[in-house]
Image 1 (cartoon, rainbow, N blue to C red):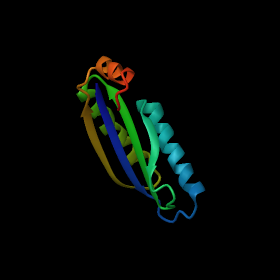
Image 2: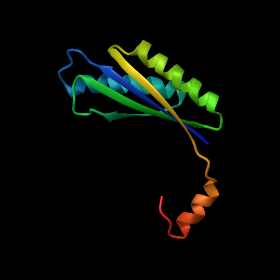
Image 3: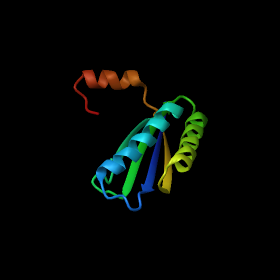
Image 4: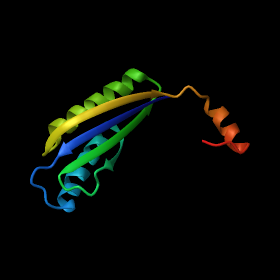
Amino acid sequence: MIIGVLRLEFRLHGNDSLKGKRKVAQSLKQKLRNKFNLAVSEVEAMDEHERLILGAVTVSNDAARVESRLHKAMALAEAAAPVEFVQGNTEIFRSTQDPGDLRADLLEGGSW
């Protein structure tokens, strides 16, 4: 299982309310969900009016597909955002544990 994580940071110059920030965030999140089927959420700086940081995640069995999807999502966010795109970072994780082993461990009182 391949897990891809995308972190997007934006600067909202002149924004003076969380309501204005929420409007931008909702629009970007919906575009990323609809176009790339990503799970997207605001992950940091939630009380700051002029910073928006979104996290997006995707899962696949193909690392190239995950990487491609995340880079395309970053390009869309950069182009579609009505605010300044500051930076975007991607990370790819590979799960090597058999899910059946984890389930058996948890049933026996194991921990995550």
